Length: 110
Image (tube, rainbow, N blue to C red; front, top):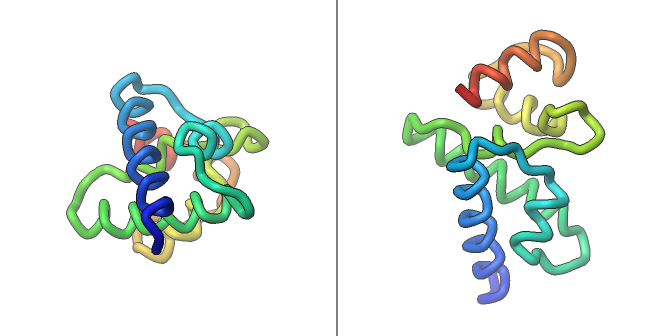
């Protein structure tokens, strides 16, 4: 990991903290822009980082910060990978969309 990689992660942490403090959802693209994640594959880099935060948050029994990041195309829900990761962590057992996913997501947001 280069210094630049670490710097965008710090910016992503800060932008995500602001969104959570303001209780405002943020899209993957908005978070990638706020963190100035370098191309190529900006959203993929962000997704990998968010999954790592999910593992860390869960291991520390903390709320999942990644729940505040949503897909513009999914009506206020995170991307399917979020729900897949929640399943891997033993937190969710359902489809990545639909009423069950929506209820699970809203519950995470408190």
